[in-house]
Length: 496
Image (cartoon, rainbow, N blue to C red; front, side):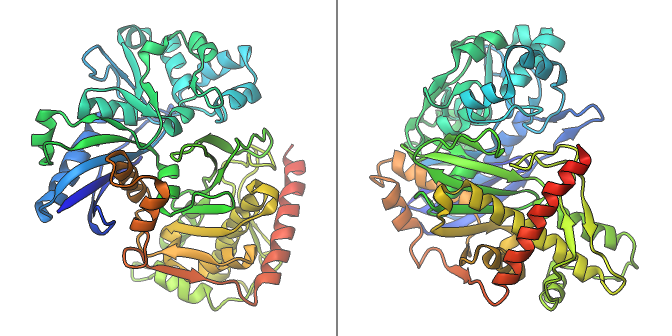
């Protein structure tokens, strides 16, 4: 039997999934690793932990499933910097995409470019991290590391070197590094010159689904995989997830739910909007772009309130997500009770970095479950709002939700009611690693194109779907969403 490996290297863990070439999931294994934080906004990881995660998870999968792996591909976190020496050994811990040390570099860049100019070139907004800022920050404040660094890599190209000896990055990941011209499809000379590096210090660019090379002999032994296995270019985790969910046509929408929620739409042309807060990159599917917005407050809002309650109740008090779902589902929509979920400001369309979170319209008769419902509604309403403003001419054909919120029919129903569209929840939530495995199959020649891979992997035998339809609450949720957005607009005036 022959198999395909999809390896998802995320910010908190490696999740590896093994499939047959018929798209049947044989197993998934995960390996968590630490992230190092300090009071100065530093966020770092040890790249060897990613490698250990791959070795441990792949070994476990192949120990339980005797199968010949013909190809593997990776879905990866984006924007994390790995500076390496001439032997491809890290010269510094990996600087994670959420790192906030780059204040000096950010000020320096804004002396030369506007934020809109960076966005126009790269498709990604100038944040507090990502490779362009991280490299410049090393050059300014950690010159010894900058000088001994031969190559400035990120997660996919660093691991490609470990696996094959070849340094290659796909287009969807290159964009978030903010060194790549997303429309000219090449490294941006003007940004490289400003950072003080050259193109030969970066990885070779490639489409997704292309063979990088054979796995190195010593790695074959370490992983326990077939001797003729090849590594195929994968993609940024959000775009791999879109492929893994079968969302490849304009009008398709992927909602990824977790600590943060993401809204992801494929488009034929780059969707450039300096006011919306969206980002765009080349998709893992040639000829498409992916428009993406991250809602950092998604699951975090609910977890914050749940933890707050648990910390102030007796030890025998239960507030499981099942209990939350049961009780919230019994609550009616309260049009006047609204939660503002922006703990760290808002940057999407309604731009106000100073905006903070809070409840509006609390009455003495409200209890914890009323407040929890307001939290869940706010996330659902804002996700639906972003889908509407990002979609082409407001047209939405298909909505798929993956991640933790898919376990809550109540929460999914809020999204469906607000959009007045059915929301599909696949029973197999590993969309990112599935998308990577599809790319592995395309690169290995098992599938001739992406649609064939989707037809095989997502047939009714391999993936069951739950569909949550909008119901009688549609009009109420739509009216509440309108009030919610109007309230946000008024609040931003107060904060400015």
